[in-house]
Amino acid sequence: MGLHQKNCICLLFFAIILCALSASAFAIILHPNGEPDGTWTDRPNDLVVGRWSWNSCFVVIAPNWILTTRHQNTTPATVNIDGVNYNCISNSQWIGGPLGNSDIQVVRLTTPANENPNLANFAEIYINTDEIDRDIVIGGHGNGRGNVIIPGMRYEWDYASGNSSPLRWATNTVDGTGTILIDGDNIYTSKVLVAYFSAHTTADDDYEGIAAIYDSGGGWFTKQSSNWELAGLTRAVQWHGTSLYSDAQAWTGDYQDAVRVSAYASWIDAIITCTGDMDGDVNDDCIVNFADLLVLASEWLREDCDGSNNNCNGADTNPADGYVDMIDFTAIAADWLIAN
Image 1: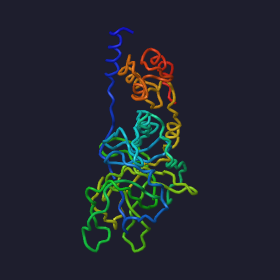
Image 2: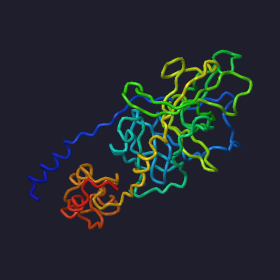
Image 3: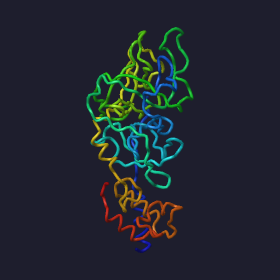
Image 4: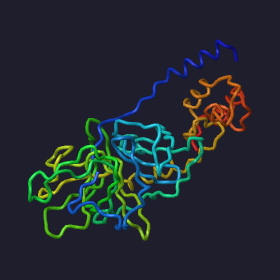
């Protein structure tokens, strides 16, 4: 290939504009009777829920995959699980459910060496549609309970500031299902589960709570036999019809909802069965397309590909020979537009 042809291809590739739909994050957990202590074990493993950047959460749903909502305004390059950073790989086909317009996204993880992490702790998808009246455990990171606003009023507190790092857990019950047509400033059509923070009584459920700021993408889990499965992703909370609230005035029955995961189970399953082992899948996003050509163009004609540079960022395809050349272009062409 001549230099002129090479430059034209590079210009074409770099002319591709990648866009991400984002909005402000909603929704962490408040507890009427204080935080659960370390002796409370009837909940999912802590490593199943993580922080999606600073303003939201994700749930590990398979050894190499996580699930989160899509309305956050951050798209981190890495996430940390149990002290290890993993690369986040996104694809437009993994955002928005089967119609592309819902508040949900699937993200693939790889190690810094571009290998599968094979995580041991994850929550499988709850596929049944009998969620109403099921007990749930909600987990997420975000601002916890702060100072009491009105002394003597048990549920009158504000959010704590600068306290969004800890993972918190709460219990609740699914009260209903529905469809949310608008999420914030974005037009989505999301199937949801609905739960409330029950009215002020003297017989509240143990650790009953409601989601709060920075918990979008956190999990609503329900127990199936002895396993915790993911039934919902925290999407929003409301108090008196507003999208965010600063105090938990529970005599009104505070509202929260989550993306109903069972409504997207087939779509999710089709994605997470991706193996990411096609020779032409340079960036390991489980589909061979222009994104792979973009990497190839940026590494074109390099002759120093080895393990220290991840075989020139994957452009030196399998079997790697140390060079980025027409052999690698042929590998991409052979797998073009195949998703696996």
